[in-house]
Length: 279
Image (tube, rainbow, N blue to C red; front, side, top):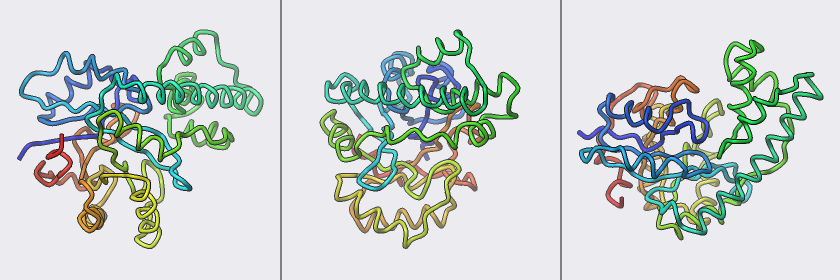
C-alpha cells in the first residue's frame, strides 16, 4: 500500500516549509508519491525535482485560484510542464493580481486598524512569488496582534473587500491542459474553514465544472469524513472523472498533518487514486 499525498504547499506560496524541508518531511513520513502544488506559482518545482531520491515518485503540480463561471474554485494541475509559456504567462498575470489584492489589504490595515507595515515587512511581502492573506496574518501574529494566523485573518483581513482577482476557471483549466497537465477540482465540497456543500448544492456545481473541462476530483481530503469521500467517489465514477487525494499540508501554517487524507486518518491505498494511473 503506497502512501501518497497529492496536495502539498511550500513557502513558495503560503506554506511554512522550504522545498528542502518539505521533501525531508515527505521522506520521514513514509510517503512514496507526492505532488508539490503551490498556489499560483511553479517556482519550487525544479528545485524539488533535483533533490528527490529515485524511490520517490514526484508529480509536478500547481494550484490555481479561480472563479469558474459563478463558482469560487481551486484547480489543481498535475504533471504540468512548468516552463510552458501559456502557464507562465497566466502565473505572471496572477502575480500582478495578487499584488493588487495585497495593496488593498495593506491600505485596509492602515485605514481601518491604524496598522502601518514597516519597510522590511513590505520588502518581504513584495519579494514573494505568490503572496496571500496568510503572509500578512503571520506578520500580525509576530507583532503580537493575534494568537495565530487564523484569528488574525478573521479579525483584521476578512472584512477587506478586494474585488475579484481570481483567474477565469475555464482559461485556467485549458492552460493546464496546454501545459500537458490534468486539471482536478481541489476540495470540491469546500476548503479550509468553509462550510461543506450538501449533495443538492454540490451536484449543479459539479455539472458546471465538468462543462468547463475538469478531469478529476479531489475525493480524499484531510477535512472530509469518509462518507463525504464516498459521495465524491461515487460522483467521480458516475462522471468518468479521475480520483485524487491530498492533505493540503502547509507546514506550521495549518494544523493538518502531512499525508492525512480524511478526518479519521484512515490510510488510503494509492490504487484507489485513479489519477495516478495517468501520471
